[in-house]
Image (cartoon, rainbow, N blue to C red; front, side):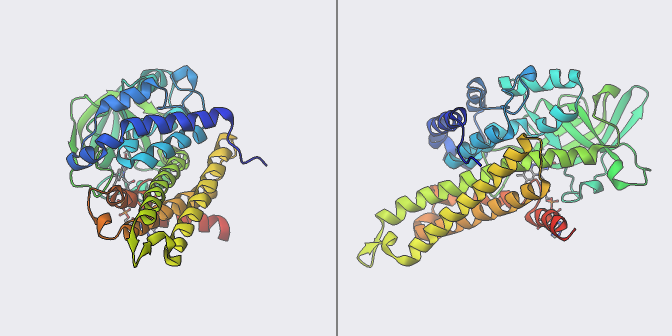
Length: 380
Ligand SMILES: Cc1cc2nc3c(=O)[nH]c(=O)nc-3n(C[C@H](O)[C@H](O)[C@H](O)COP(=O)(O)OP(=O)(O)OC[C@H]3O[C@@H](n4cnc5c(N)ncnc54)[C@H](O)[C@@H]3O)c2cc1C
């Protein structure tokens, strides 16, 4: 058993940290306040090779594993979650395309994601279908040699900024299994009938674009079907099993930022004639935070490593997802607590981290859904 990162992986960590520290801190508060991001930073990250590292070299990626993408994610989120998400969520769904799309589809979509020329959205959630995607009612009907799409999608990351989207649609409504009624259809964002409306007023990761989408008689060629017709649900699960690893890394990065700011603050702040760090109550908080961060990182390193070895462990990934997200939410809560009134002000990063953390327990599988996966594997 070897717990060391390779030299190449350590170099990736160092480079990602330097990039994030150089690009994010001066702009993060502005992006959070104004609910926008400077895509020039994303392009720069693409030029330096941080985006789409997990994609095959043939399609513009670096041919690395999900672990390397997680290492970059952790470093970006440890500086600022909103900026980290805005740079790295641009490939969300490419994990699924790499597995199931045709060579032509991959050639058309994937290289641009790595080159800073294209952003991908993956539209699964609907106003009335979230944790249970089988309830999705957006339809794609085959008329001659075209799919005609009608419906609405909700909470779609990069929905107003993407060039391409993959849309989870009902294609086989009469199939007896609700798990075989859906398919993914690739839709160019500028097709007539596609509208995207930015959602405002998010609690956190406000730099990142989130949108609702509408599809009104949208026509795409029949060869825009991604993978096998009726296998969309299976493709969602395969996507989540990989993308959830990235959420774990987001959570560990955010929790690290909370620990870093808390340590700095409790060492400097004096009350009752001594630093906050000298109180045992504070020391316990710091010790628990550091332990949970380490445990979360070990969980996701193993889950990502297993995935990269072709030995995907769904239950382990689900454990890592809920546990690391909880770690981040609790770390943010304690970080604000240790900062006292100062932590309540937007001048202090912990206030933003507190707001950013909560999404980790909601998207790509709420914590209850993750625990169901774990329980099923334990109880049989
Ligand atoms: C910022 C943001 C970005 C997003 N990006 C995307 C995207 O790019 N693409 C996309 O398709 N979707 C995206 N989503 C949607 C996200 O994945 C869903 O919000 C999530 O799956 C939960 O679905 P829901 O909001 O409909 O909640 P619901 O399914 O209504 O669940 C509400 C709550 O009920 C509880 N719950 C649900 N099921 C169970 C259960 N079986 N047992 C016990 N408790 C349960 C959980 O606590 C859950 O939080 C995004 C959401 C946000 C907020």
